[in-house]
Every structure is written in structure tokens, then in C-alpha cells.
Amino acid sequence: MAADPSVLIVIPARLASTRFPGKPLTPLRGPDGATKPLVQWSWEAALRAADVAQIVVATDAPAIARVVEDFGGRVVMTSPACRNGTERTAEALASIGLTPDLVINLQGDSPLIRRDDVLALIRAWRETGATVVTPYVTCDRATEERLVSDMRAGRIGGTTVVTDRTGRALYFSKNLIPYQRGSDVALKLHIGLYAYTPQALSRYTASEPTPLEQVEGLEQLRFLENGLQIQTVEIPDLPGGFWEVNNPEDTEMVERALRNAV
Image 1 (tube, rainbow, N blue to C red):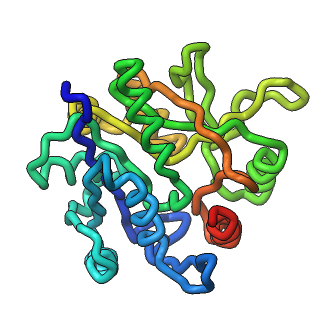
Image 2: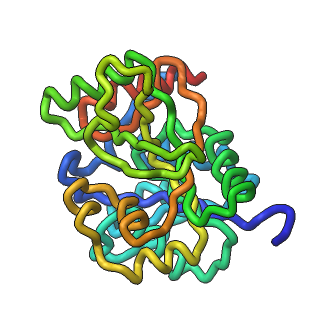
């Protein structure tokens, strides 16, 4: 392995979201008052690591492809049959003829990803030898309250993860796990950023969707249900909390975080 591994960042983006149709093209207002579509904010987040990775947007929607091309991004067209971002990432990799050491899926609703978050995944992959790596932040009280509020309102919001003592994921859920009201065990909010080896992606796409993956609506559970370990790595929280655009109600919070990041 070379000292500097070859890395490909793929930003999967689709229009047919059941919770938030058209989400990648949703305009978000930046610190200067100008608006950009969410997919462009995610592209610019990936550009923070452009010195260590090539970057592409993978989509099945011509409307998204046109927007990406207009702001100067690179697009790979993928099949509408892709059932989630991991399958779309794998198809994009297969279609562009690259053989990277590591593939990073930066989900298109995560514009708050920082360069150091990407580097943390690469470092964890090097240090642990894991074939799948993903980050989390430890929830503060405000973030936990937002998660509880989403649940009470019937919104499917953030994802929580529980790990063993070495940081390997035991389970991911749209519910709040572990059940710990009044406990000292902090919730871990999973962040939509994955690093995989090409071999792990091949194993993923060679298997069918699994029962827990389907009932939770969480693509990463297919790895766990098929016996493939996922290494987690803790990353620092943002001022005001780390959040993704899961629902329309999240846009204002993410816009505020974008302003605070300046």
C-alpha cells in the first residue's frame, strides 16, 4: 500500500426520497444570504478533502445531473434500481474505471462534513484494518432533545449507534438506543459518512437486502447482518450540534450551522 492511498468520494443523490422528495435540489441559504441546492453544499463539503480524494456525484436523475454540471461538478449516472446510497456508490465505482484503495460515501444530505471528518475515516481504516468505517458524535443534551422531539412528532430523524468497547458497531437504529433515560451512557448520533474498501462494497452488492436493514430502513445493517464488521470513529461535534437534512424541518437548523461554521 502506498503511503498516500487513492481515495474516491462518491456523493449519492436521488430525487425519489419518500421522506423528503427532491431533497438534493432543496435550496439552503448560506452565510452570505445566497442560496445553493443541497447537493452543491455537499459537493463543497467534499471539496475540503479534494487534495486527498477524487470526487463524483452519483445520481439517476437528469435534473440533479444538470445542476451538478452547472456548478462544475463531475457526475456519474447510475440506475434507478439502486436501492440505497451504498448500492449507488458501488455502481458508480464500477462504471468509472478507477481502482481506489478506499471509497467514501458522503451522503448528499450531509453538508456539514468537515475535512477532518474524512481524514478521521482514512486514519481509522489504516489503524484498524477495518473494511467499513463510519463516524458518530456523542450527543449533548440539545441534540438528544431534538432526537426525542422528532420521535414524538412522528418524524424519522437521526440514527443512533451502539458499539462495543473497541468501537465496533453492534447495531444502528432510527430509535434511540440504548434505552437509557436517566443513565450516564450518552447517545451516539451516527453521521452519514462511510468509508469502504472496494471488496466490502462487492460483498454488499452481492447480497440481497436483509431483514433488519429493511425494517429499520438503514442500509448499513446489511453489512452487520452478513457478518461484516463496521468500525466506528468518534468525531467532534459542531457548535450547536451536528445535524443532517433528514426532513424539511431540518433545513433551518442546517442553515444556522452553516452560518456558525464560518
